Amino acid sequence: LSSLDSNIQVDIFFHHFNFDVFSKLIYDNIGNYNYYVIMPANLKNTNSVIENLPQNNVYILDQIHPELYQYSGIYQNFEKGVFDNLTNGLELLKKYNNFILLFQEDKQPQKMLNGFQKFCGSNKFNNEIVSSIKNRTPKKGETYLIPDDRNLILIIKKIKEEGLLLAKDIGIISYNDTLLKEIVEGGITTISTDFEKMGNRLAQMILNKEDLKIENPTSLIIRNSL
Image (cartoon, rainbow, N blue to C red; front, side, top):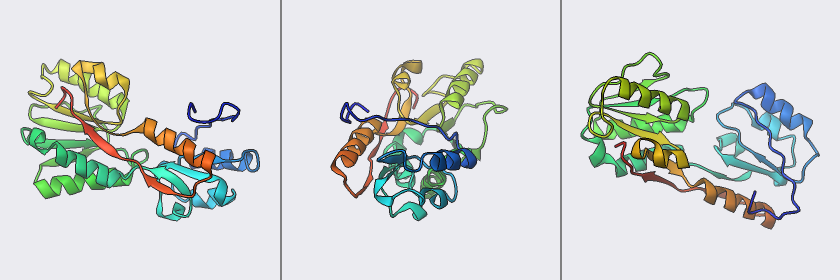
């Protein structure tokens, strides 16, 4: 928003990972805007709705699916980002004996799971995929890759209840960096794309009417939780 001209009006709508809400938002706003920035998340068949908008006026942000390749936008390469950055942290991860990914199919990108499984297979890591940690008790020797902040707070609470020490007994990698993660428990290690860079570049694309697909870089930020 800060990278756009001050005379540009921006409205923001949320689809909450619900295809019906997503569809209604698109149909209700056909012709109302000069440009449409759309985050399809992991919703299926979004092209059947998005194709009702002028192609040159649409930008896809964050996740891009094969049926949306004709549109301009900026995206994360989740499979490559997870695999490469876990590889960058390999020496730190070796001290744990079980690697757990918290993965909710209806909210997380499939390619995040692919990257995790590829890394564990290549490096012969014992691993688990779990949809919830609500009923799970963390154990010494485990490390967790946690995509959402609600479960990040929950696992930290459980670790304290079990008397375990972060980075000594148990490890955490969170997905997507925030200011809060710089501070919580002395700092949480993250894998994250540069959202500020993503936003600035998207603003340039809109202002300059660029027709491009850009992969936004992802990096491992090592802090005290690993």
